[in-house]
Length: 163
Image 1: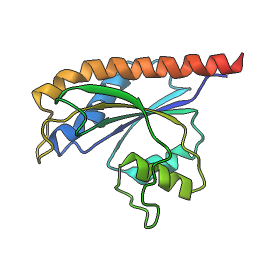
Image 2: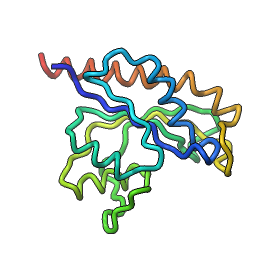
Image 3: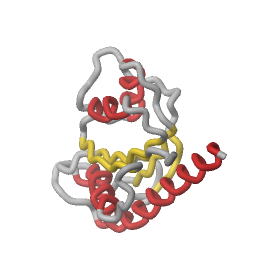
Image 4: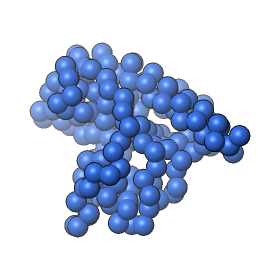
């Protein structure tokens, strides 16, 4: 059975480079060929929506988001999410997109966070305004390739577990 993978683009398109996740997701969607086992969704700033969707028992999650304070603007990072960090489960926030808070909300709803790979990009500007900075826009093609690589890796690992 093929691994079910959710690709989640997160970010606010009205705050400059915070719209990185939705832009990468838009381009990933143009290339999707396996809709039965792979779903790509733009969650914007809807953290609870993502938490509820994760209750569907996805095998893996690929989060695409802007990641501040990890390097030079436009730098793409790929890393595993830390499910042990505790977000603020008391007073669930429908708009919080901090991954720790989303995972805490998921646990509060009775779910278990799936293995999560984050594809992020260091931002240059998250001030009010629509559109990505030149540095972040230039990183979008690399991020699309990293999302595709993450999906391929997660599928290969799932196939090895099935053998």
